[in-house]
Amino acid sequence: MPQVTGIGGVFFKAKGDPKVLAAWYQEHLGIKLAPWGGAVFRWPDDKAKDKGVTAWNIDEKDSEKFSHSEANFMINYRVDDLLGMVANLKAAGIKILEGPDISEYGKFAWILDPEGNKIALWEP
Image (tube, rainbow, N blue to C red; front, side):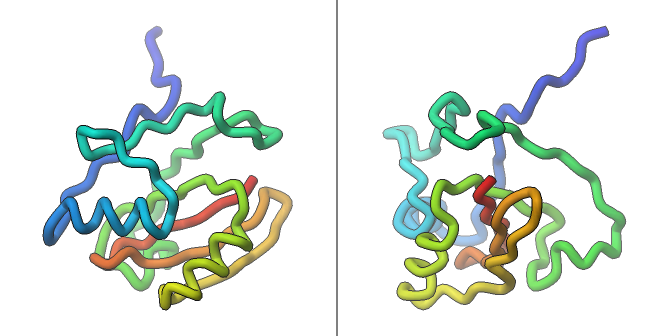
């Protein structure tokens, strides 16, 4: 039987100017924008031990995981230096909602983008 083999993309609508929001992601999270306005992540570029995996999960409707956000989704971005990124975000005046937390799965922190979408940051 054919099956899904991974996440092909993450797409969401901006509430305001999408170029301004994309620029925020580029400036504060280091997402390199392509000329067409989006980004492409290639897992072979990821040097973590797991060689670049993507988790997928559906939560209960009353899950607290999405608290602080009205969105019914959350994107978990892999990062190569969580503590450095958190320091840069704080220096830029961006509030860290939770973390950095360290577990057997790696380091995690959570923030909101300018439109109130909750973002998980993860260093495997």
